[in-house]
Length: 214
Image (tube, rainbow, N blue to C red; front, side, top):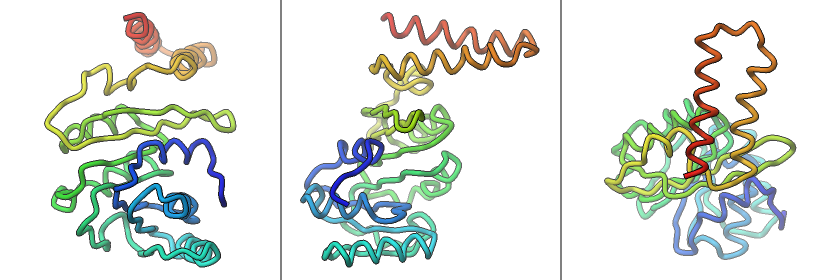
């Protein structure tokens, strides 16, 4: 358990050594263990809504000889967030992430949220802006022929541009090509698509290309 996948390592990139965080949806606890074992975070609470997943995390933590608090919780509902400044939410969809973060009263002390959603990134970025978090940076990771977007949001009054909300920062050539090719693949596969729908995909392709060239 000394090594992490590229997907989890991208999350680590956004964690500071003085962060006190909750690993929401910790699964087997590998990220939590890695952060504490390598002194990459000041404090970690490992949490999951699934009792079996949390039991696995507890077992792995004990085997690693570490002292990491674990909490069975639906999101952050049952977690004492006093002294916590950062949330890590990974391995779930945007709808679930929105549900977890919907109660703004629980986010008063949270100044950083690192999110790895597996769908609807435009909706996620827009939602985060609406609750007072600015997309500060993103890392795009390909693993087993699937792309993962890891987003770091910072609490501030700043707002992202519409292009940033839609596509991120377009600062990774490989991911940029994926964005374009994924839309082109849909056009190639669904030849009976209505003209209006095809235009949406074509317009997005041109929009991405123009933004990349700026």
